[in-house]
Length: 150
Image (tube, rainbow, N blue to C red; front, side, top):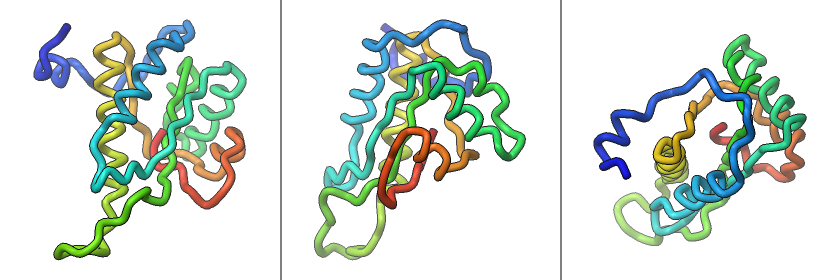
């Protein structure tokens, strides 16, 4: 097992992937690491969607390439899509009662997932350019919750 600094040094944005499926056990472990990540007042403002079916992966890949970016996603054997949800708990009082912490929490969950993937020998790349509405349509995600991270 790697120590944390070694893990942090090794993790980088990967843009070249093996043409083989990601084992479900590894995806479950990655999702568990994200789920267990800290969030403000334990609000857990997220839902995680693992995409492994080759046709769905191809559709999600196209939805990340609309701005002419992320061409490498056509090689990705799996995606994790994270939506921003209404917080389960809203902090009361304090000096910043109306502060929205969800974006911070989503970032923490994402890096926990990426570091777990690295420990398992899997590469990751956090993407900020994608068509949120198209990804929601592809995955059948209803409601107003936006795709926050792919």
